[in-house]
Structure formats: C-alpha cells, structure tokens
Image 1 (cartoon, one colour):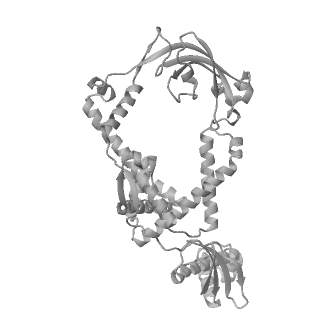
Image 2 (image 1 turned 60 degrees about the vertical axis):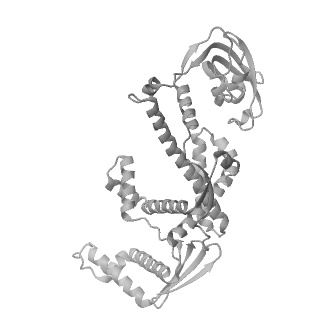
Image 3 (image 1 turned 45 degrees about the horizontal axis):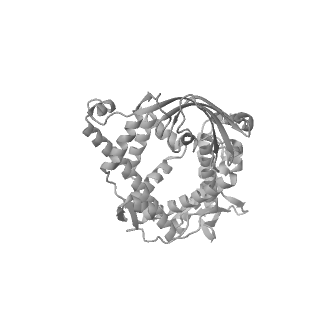
Length: 445
C-alpha cells in the first residue's frame, strides 16, 4: 500500500492511497471466504456455496467492506508513518478501481493545529485568600436570621425602610392595562393582590418600594416607574408604567436572637459555636471552589494570549452550532419566546463563536500539555468515574457502560477527565500572588 499526504492550510490534509492489485485480491478473497463460511443459500450446505455464487449474491456488501477495510488500513498507516494528529478521517472519495485490479482513492483529513507550546509552568496569577473571616460568618448568620424572621403587623406608623408593605396594584401603560398593551406576557406585572413587597433597594421593580415609604395602611398611590433598557420585556424598555397601588398593611420583621436557641432551630442538638464552625467549613469549601475557578480562568487566558494558531474551520463550525444551541436552550428556559430569540440571532452567534474559539483553543493547548507532561487517565480512574455516574443515575454500572459505548461517549469522558487533571497540574505549578478581595476585583489580571 502506497500513501501520500498533502498538507493544506487551515488544518486540512489530503491522503492519497494506492493499493496494489495483489493486496486488493488478497483482502477481497479473505472477505469473500468469511461470507462463504457464514452464508445460508438455498440448494447449498452452509459454507459449501461456490465462490462465484457468493460474489454474485453478496457482491455489493463485499465491495463496501473491502473499501472500508482498505480505508482503515490506510488511515492506520498514515498515523504510524506520517506522525499525524488527525481529528477526522472523513470518507474515501474518488475511488478508482483500475483495470489491473489495483485501487486508488483519497480522503480529506482534518488535522489538529500545529503550534509550539508556550511556557506553561509558573504562570503568574493573582487570587484572594481562601480564609473565611469572622465578618463573613457574621454576614452569613445575619442572612439566615433574616430568612427565619417572623413578621408583626404595624398599625401605628407609616411604611419605612426594611418593612414589608402588603399591597394591591394594577398596572397601566399609556392609560391602558398592561395585558391590553403588550398581551399575555404582561400578566406578570398587570395585577397583584396581597403582594408582600420588601421595602429595600432593588426589590421587585426598581424604585417601586422606595416610593411607598411614608405611606400608611389604606393609602392609595399611583407609582410611576420608567423601565431601563435591560428590562426583560422589550416592549416596555424605556417606557413609563404606572402601578395604581393600595397599601393593605405593613409588617415589620422580627429577627431571632443570635444564641443557642437560634442554633437549635437550625440544627437540633447544635450550639451557636458549632453552627458557626459548620458555616465556616461550608463557606470555606465554596470559597476555595470559586477561587480555584478564578485561578483556572487566569491560566487559560494567559495560555491563549501567549500562542496563536489556526483552528480547523469545520470543527469550529460544529462547536459554534453547539454553543448556539446551548444559548437558545438557556434563553427558552428563562422565558424567551421564539420571536425574542430570532431577534437576538446575530448576538447569539457572536457570543457562540467567541465561546467556541476559546473552548477549542484551550482544549488543544491542554491536550498538548497533557502529552508533554505524560498526564493520562488510567482505566481504573475511568471506571471509577463511570461508577459515580451510575450511582447518580441509580442504574447498574454495566448498563451505564453499555449506554455510553452505544453513544460513543467513553472517549469524551476520558478526555474531560484528562483536561481536568491537566488543569489541576497547571494550578499546582502556577505562581500565585495572594491579594485582598478588593484589590482583585479592581485589577483581576
């Protein structure tokens, strides 16, 4: 078998293959013999049908299997002799069965990009401390107290900040009801009865609760709010709506005291000090996770900035479509209509393209680093991970493995684990400068 590889721009190569007649004949005879041994034809005992009969009956299948076998052998030889990193072998094309019995064909290969790895050890990054301060614990406990607050009716004063205003309201736009103005989607804001409205900045609609400060139970007030350009309903962006409001009541939160009785309500049998220890541990775990994500983000950004290389166009197109599909699904889950999504189509594909390029570049870089550092995923580690998937799905591991194999997801899982191990390696090797949270927010890079 003779092969020749012609590399082209943008990670493309053409593999030309010539298979001598003797090799073709030998492979065809082998395939035909297999069919003959298994075929059950009328008038012949199993395995006794003449070769000519087998070739006539199964000629198409034999030719297809012959091409597939020769194609596979050619691809294996190309990988072995040409030192190629092939992402997609494509399909055999321009198949030429010559009079002398030899066969020639070609295929279009998609190659992984070629580049020189930048320095990936000791990357300079910044990160806040993972230490959980007493102030952070107290803030968390105050948040829990607010969630466990009881509410007392207020009858002797007007609404003030941090109260709960119990209100009825109907909403109009340009003098007509909201549902009449923008349709069914307006029901969300059109009318509420006995609505509990926290009187604090950013509650419900911006500026609504603040304008009720000073009102008393029984008061009626028309509250006008101009919605900004980020409001979810496009029809209302920049528009002024009026909420015709009646104050039905005022409630003041009564927070539980921060003591052992409070701790007992949270976790029976625990003291306040023990609750603080639990909060510290949980916050520490969450903080460590978030800061590790910040470290990874900086490392990935610096790696991508340090080297430039072409990406295979077809692989990029596939990933852009995957990202776009994900964004559309996310928008639908958040309530966006088909019309809204269509209007944002250009923006969706712009975001999807940026994500796709970043993801692919990062993946190729991490794959190269893994190879350079001989990082690998053992079969035992892979099996352990699949076992966890089986436990989550509450299914037998054999069934999960079978399903993953059927959907060709085993290699994808192994690759994800490899990328994860490589990222862990880079974080361990990074040169981390600890800074305050304020400094990091002001200058994260």
